[in-house]
Image 1 (cartoon, one colour):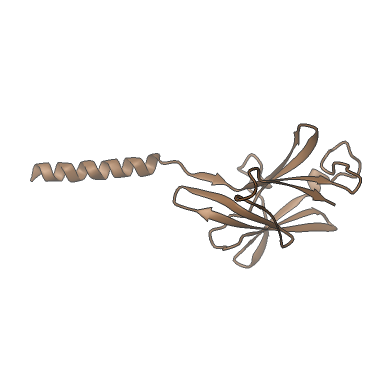
Image 2: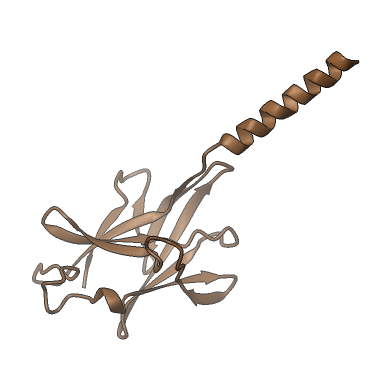
Length: 156
């Protein structure tokens, strides 16, 4: 009887150890380059016509409510960052990945006059969440079948 209890205890111990030691992967970022009709980089802070980082806001739609995104404990509390990628600037957006949404919606408000809508489809499991498809203003712009890099160049 003691042997049976010991075996059950060991099985439970190994099951708990593997669950607690498992890693979770959250891959929900998408990148944009933004240019005007003349090819000027609208994310380059040296461009006087560029979008100002301080004016850009993200909103997630969760359970029918549109909420501005801000998590003060994160490195990028507004869920985006602008950085230089070779000779251009890009914005990396961390998309809405709410479990309550079949097709999560993210709004990017570039300024008071200009907002775009991003919808995304996610592949979910117990160990990961990964974007599968991305629509910009209801146009499919990226999916894992045809594209390797989650990137799109936007013309404004």
